[in-house]
Length: 195
Image (tube, rainbow, N blue to C red; front, side, top):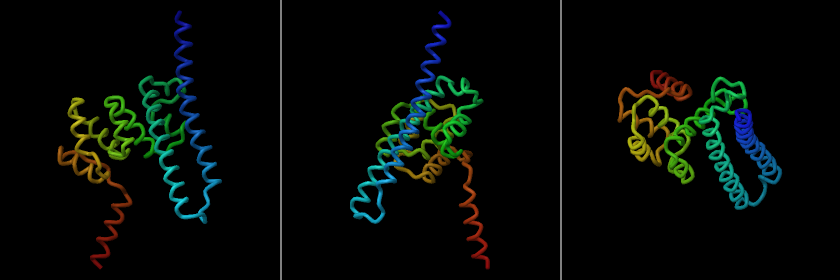
């Protein structure tokens, strides 16, 4: 009986992992086909139409990947593959850059608490960066689901920087890592103004 249950779990894990890999392969193959057919010298209207179509497809793939990452996280399937964390699985096995991986993981985890986030992503009411910042904030607080909903509502249609400011207004002790490039820009600007 235990062997049968373990076999079903392994089969379920394999299906999820194959789903993630199939999404990645499908997206990669789709991108290759698009790149073959995309012609920069073509009619500007058709070029704009094509890029809109590709961007929409890419957004659909991203949302599906987030849903699958959420399932892998809930079931802790990354352990079965020998990864010590979901982050290691997403960066090493799926090949995402660290920042992209964190945005997807944060979104996947928020999706577990608030499934309606999926519709907000689809409707472009919230973007991955804002969701990631919100989830990072939520992890540091003891908030109810309703509190999270209210805060997310206040972050709708905001840029990442606006979301940071909104969250800092809620908690002045809240800190977000500064981007080095922006800090370097400000430092250079300060040096120029002193000269």
